Image (cartoon, rainbow, N blue to C red; front, side, top):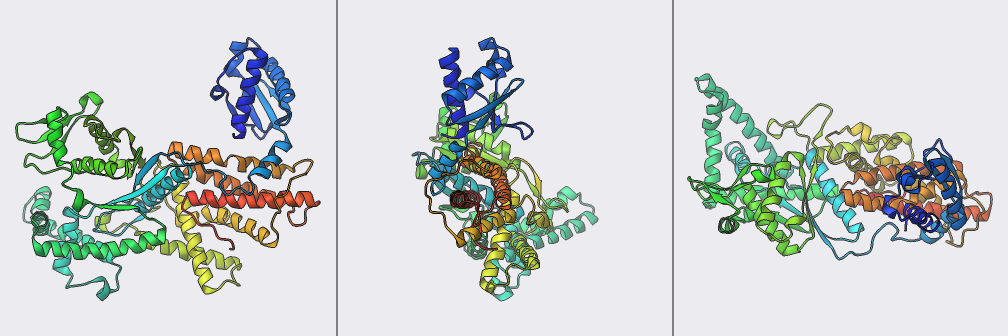
Length: 591
């Protein structure tokens, strides 16, 4: 039981035993005491003043007296300010917590719950490399999966590759026309980048053709439909769906280049999956369900033969699920894939990490699955996140203004190298150790910056700001971990009984922060929000740095203080490293 729960329990018991009032623990508001007041935690009294028919100040005095008398091992003193009871927690409570948990490698994590969660993320198109938006998606997806794992869930990480459709055909047509047989090997260009170059090339050629047609008197809208290169891409899609051998062969070849490129990028950014799905395998899924839905009366057919669902009673509108020619639309295959994934994994929760432009799509998907009576439909959850922009503005793939993920990682490693070498603290590192450190720092900065913001908010990514060693950044936290490890390399705690009579202010503050970790992990899971952990671990790192600045560890005044402080260093290493691991961030032992 955490400190807040312990306070709620103690207050509830005193209210029942001495005031004959039953108030559920969850209704007792307990906050950290504001810095300008004396105390550690504050009980808000207004919630039960009416029931007890007492003035807030009187109730606070009587409750404070009763609490310090009934539980002296928990509360050592109190003060009352208006309707707030400020409680000071006994030092012995904090030292016993350190004794119990400092060497506990499972501190913070929950036991197996028997529940399953599936997280689908990344979902790239195979006509271009991963870009900055994909990075936020991958980091969110991986982190959410890890947070659920740490909260006792069995986790499956999945990815759906959008490997078919008109966008793929655009890259293929451009390569046929302008590629001259170019390959990743012949050009020295990473496969996903090479294919992406041809997608951009398609856009440039389309612009030229549209301009020429407009000049001849055609409207821009008509020109975009009639441009020869656009018609060629559409024909290629028809040929692909018909299984034309040479089109299928080209499609497989270019997709293989992209997958090889993705594999390298995923390894660099620390993203992985338990199962990969491909749209080319799943795009026909769900067609049988359209027929079932018609029979159940979930769907209806219009005069032209198209099939729809009416969601107006649910506050939405009518949505097509099958075209008049019998072909599936995008949501049809999503219904089929949702059913397939549930049959394969049997998840209690199925999380889709997808940008907020798809909010409507996922409302419709969940509703349709529920109305069809699909197993697990109630567990479908869209983890919606905002767009990432650069200081220069929005990115557009077709215009070639997107910043590729590989380029961002390169830049982050370069900035990390420059700043670290300026500090001059890696002179004794080997070349290999430096390279690994710069990657660790660069990725730590990148991931932390993209995860420190609530997923629902849009954000601007600034590489220079993200890697400041003194700011609200990953490298600041990584430095704090390395600082603790440096102390522990000189001497380890014995984990013997702690016998200090009282705590230094910074020791106490650090223990208070460490104690919060299990509830922080639980909150991050409940809210599906890694920024809860990001904000916490930054504050913990600040508290640790204040502690080692003001409290001598290896040259402490007494052996008892030294043991306590070494245990606090060890405790901090565990919590910082596992909290950062929940974000997918490695922490170096030296830097």
